[in-house]
Length: 505
Image: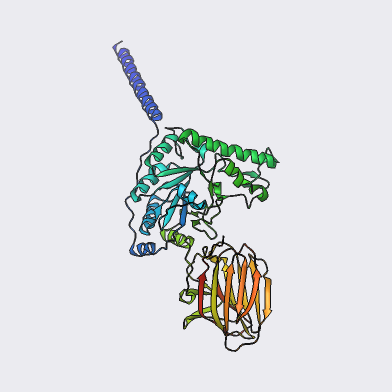
């Protein structure tokens, strides 16, 4: 009998131990699950730039009255999405921007700039934006902003913000309030629940700028308006409830304004719907820029403000090059002193002038991605030699290569004629004006003045006027040649540009 009793007592002891261990495990799990989610905040060690990168950063130009806008997403070493930067790379970005002399500004500064109200901006003004409202804004980005004394704007997809203490890829309401309390952060809307791809006829597309399929049927224009209004209202209600005030700025989900969607005419109503919802500005450029990006200026369209989209593959040198390309360059006077590169032509400086050589149609364009978005009204002068029956001179003004539009106005100077023509995008060139000129063996003095939508062209005292498309509203200069074979040369002697400082807008 003694042996069964001992076994019984041993079993009871084992059961008690198992029960206590299980209870302890339950308590540990319960405590862990009930404890508010509060991930640690940390930033990597300060980034060190190599000498060449630091020199490039220091050489970036500034332009008073403009703001470079960048947009990021998450910053994490464990998230391998195409929009997520590693902590080290993001730190190098901030270090390079600081070394370049950039200082961050507030949304209110941009809004005043757009409204043509007085605003004081640093010579190199920067607006940092972060789309989606991911948790790394709190855990990683904010400590790094503090290190460089930068501020930022978080554009929130408000339906994804979670309650305090909830584990999530996105921010919580407590973290939002904590970020606001730092004084470093402002907040805008990235819609309430439209940052997704949804069914449209024959495809998937963002729902903001497109009519979507509902139960297999295309929604009506009225239903689209109602849906968009409701989403914007819900987003603003979130800001009022959580942060005490509505958002003034909006960023389009996926950077999509609907202009290329299934209902571009309907999408043109978006600015009015955004204005009715209480927004004052809206930003595009969530993804990598595929075209020209301009720094924001007083002339920027308030409902499609440009941003440079930054991705996981954006190196520091890539970033600096994109920033350089976005900053407008003041119009120079001595055009011959600039760097020129050939497009189907050889370009060479010659005694204060520019020689263009080609056996067909070729041009010399500004080297280095010069942003000419502030080259609006100006006068170009040059003396042109080398024109004959085999070669004509071609001077392009308001050329959009460095200004964000595709087109130009061309003045073609032949042996005995002058032609003014325009080209918009890929459309055929359209002749606007032409005249006959007397023959000359000594070269010709050319003056081209562009003001608003009018070009006044004077060649050896003969004047020609043409009115052109207002889409050619700004842009730089190209010098070219149109030859019929052989290696022909046209020389532009002492070419200059003089900005027109009169009020023209």
